[in-house]
Picture (cartoon, helix red, strand yellow):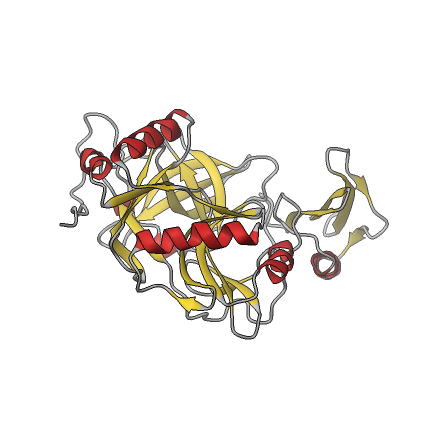
Length: 376
């Protein structure tokens, strides 16, 4: 079910998308102030993507706020049940009764690798290197009953693209658990805990990776992309430079001889070419801008500046979590050149920590932080 983002006035506004066959449609819902004082307009517009939006007959003008909200909620519910989604790719999502419940699945999460560690990580064949996809952490499971579901970083069930489910029902007949990043229409797979009905989380990562290469090739599902992992030092160095030159987000290093473990692990390290951080929205400003903050070591939320929300993206609300890219951080000040990435649905404000920031303004005094160490 879609959420209800708000405009700068605090009134609901949402843009939905639906792609089905050759049809590619946009549906926009909003509530605004009416012509007369104390009245409101519930406006519903639609069009083919790329065409001017036209007001539909469902729109209500000059009604009370209660009537406008009731109409807004009714149309939003109907459209999402019809396959419209806030995903700009227009994918239809599952609408599972289990959404929001604990799944029992927990991903392995990488710690931050400092630049000083890079030469060792690239030269040591015990560390594999793969591209870091820029999306939401997603675990994908087919259980013994044949049900296919997705879970987020917190281990809660979430809705997933319906086309994933349809394709995987046709391709895979045995239980599996895949770990990846959900980006647009695709799941970029980087690990597996179960394949062909066999629990493999105890196996070294190198063996899990080679099993993924074999099994995913037989499935031939275009929405699943296995992230290439290199172990040879020369191949890693080439891949690292290719990704950096291509302005990709970064890389993840994983120890080849380690089994899967839940949560943050020293056996998995990430390095970003362009720094970004998950930030809490503190307030909604004028002109499509929001103030953002991070939590310091004392548990205090520290403002780190403002970021502009793109015109085709609903303005988030205070308390939401958003991903923001930036050039560097000026301790005691704000992010330099912050750029909106996306709204996160897999993190709480308490997880937006100042300690995640590793790129500081040149010559600025850095805050003391605990750094991950190389595994022997």
